[in-house]
Length: 268
Image 1 (cartoon, rainbow, N blue to C red):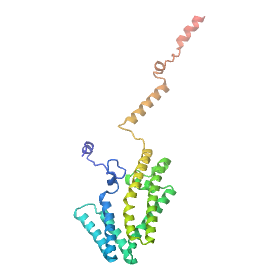
Image 2 (cartoon, rainbow, N blue to C red; image 1 turned 60 degrees about the vertical axis):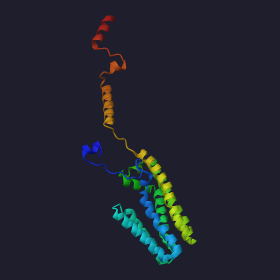
Image 3 (cartoon, rainbow, N blue to C red; image 1 turned 180 degrees about the horizontal axis):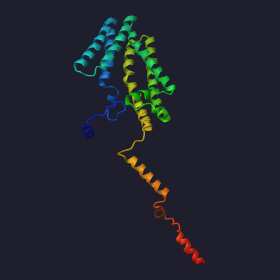
């Protein structure tokens, strides 16, 4: 614990890893566990389906998802990635089972990518860029950035990047879906997952930092700003009352009444 924390007895609120320059890139994107939990079920489903059929692939993918969830709980890790992965796998295998086709496993992902892309696109068009809204919620900065045109522009840049990412995924994977390319669907799901997300994430971090710089309010540092303001106010008041003004400005003092009288006597 740092010295300020020891003095106040308070622990500062933890900032989200996203956009934190002290956090590694992989931490900002959710960590290695997120990558593993999203990839292993697909790497299991596709080859098992090729060798042993759809039923075996369904049970294999479910088994892997359950094993990853149990592993996270046993190690007392954050179970959120494993829970999300299990729910996603359960939905995918259910669609594959209902349709009786292995390519149905990828239909849910294609639909969600299309929906995400549409939401991000619409938010940018109506000038409520979703990246800015999400970041305001995570960083607790409020929505004041919407009044700053330049900050809103940078949040829109990041939002457009994600809209493009989701659109590319949805269109290309749907084309493979129509052609019954199950193996290529699995490859595309992984290959277009983290690599493209990395590109969009880098654009997002760059754009969000630009927006934060523009939206950063001016705050005093150790009272320096208030002291400067007080000094300026004192100087202004001194100039208005004329105290000490003659000596510093170099202007000649106004003659007094006695001086006026002596001048008149001299003239007379």
